[in-house]
Amino acid sequence: MICTFLTRYELMQSCGTDSTVNLWFASTSAGDELPSESLVESPTQRVNPLLNTYSDFEDSVYGLAWSSREPWIFASLSYDGRVVVESVKPLLSKR
Image (cartoon, rainbow, N blue to C red; front, side, top):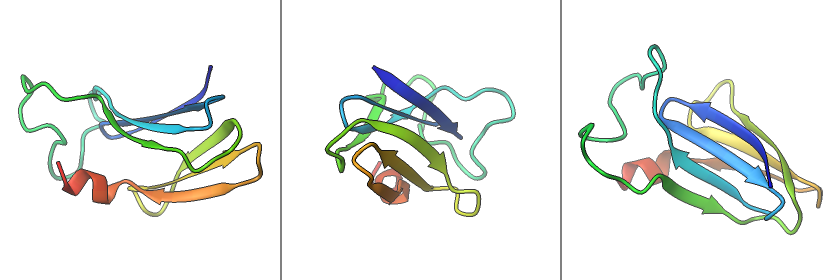
């Protein structure tokens, strides 16, 4: 079961009862493009849409939020009481 979806630029997050947060490549809509460069080099290039899985929790994850100040930072919240803050920027620089 998935509880939340969040999108930013070409990224989407999902979370749910499996105690994980997944970071995905997603299609962009008009006006929602990256400020400087695209995450995918070519529109015809095939990529695995799952970029990363975060498994920092022991219970269902029910909250996600992108930072309003730093575009590559997000926080997630679980029923086990943990709040985890992560940066996706290191993942994007490897691609």
